Image (cartoon, rainbow, N blue to C red; front, side, top):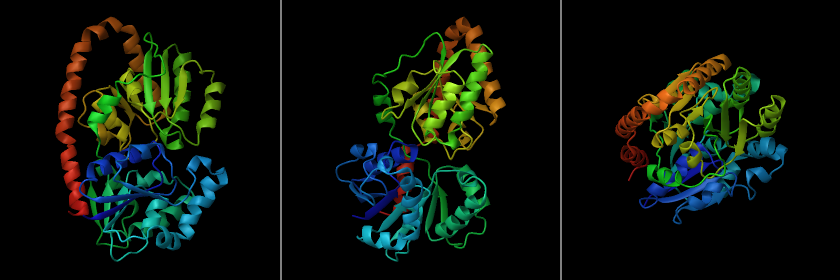
Length: 389
């Protein structure tokens, strides 16, 4: 049985983390699997099959480290001492080593090992993930050298692959294989967990928008709060619920208070089971500044929800889904798109009720199309071909 090592920053609640847990649980009967994390005790660890082994670099979870430790010392240690860390913590001889997320874990797993096949998974839009400025340029150059040390690069969307090729058009290693493998998703788990109760009572008299997103600049929650305020002031009443946590939480809470929208815009925090909230929403939204693919959109499609996104790489996730709306990726574009939706829902509620049957039928067709294009068995086959039997 082949020994496979997967690496990720931590198994906290997140899109890539969720995918990894579902994927290794599916593969663990065919491979001897170990997961190496930089930070331990993530919420998703308890969902791993008992046959899967865990290793961690640190003995404290990310949230228990100081802010300086979180942002500077911990990732800097991985960067400066990656060879020493690799030799100390990755002791066993693995047949395949897979860095499953961009950043520190990809840099660590790039350390040369002639006995192991090296694979890296890329979940994000590389052209935008670093931002701008000198720091961004340094990271791009550093990671260009890092990616050149891998045998295989796996992208979760065609858009991600195209953006990567533009950024790293002159990658040192011309022999690297690049391929697109869509994220594996456990549909039955999502449908089952969506039937659980929620601790929030949605206002049935208003439209309830739900978003699931890490509270970081990329997800654009700050501009969403501003759009929400403009809509409320213009008389377009609705509620917004955001599930997730992250470093911008305090900033966003302050922005909600400054805009006096505490009774209509809610940060619900991290939820181990976001599916009942998605299921009970009127619309599911992912209004990010940029995206890699947007795994949560696959989950919303399984729950047959109307989806609203901004014009990012997330387009690829909904291209065959009928019940969607793609908005211009600006504050005004989001405002105008949501305004039209709220106006239509408010002014034509009777017509909407009459058309519910038709919309449900559209949803069923969309789900059928998605089943054809998003084939879990094909995804597992491709992963196994990549790893080798």
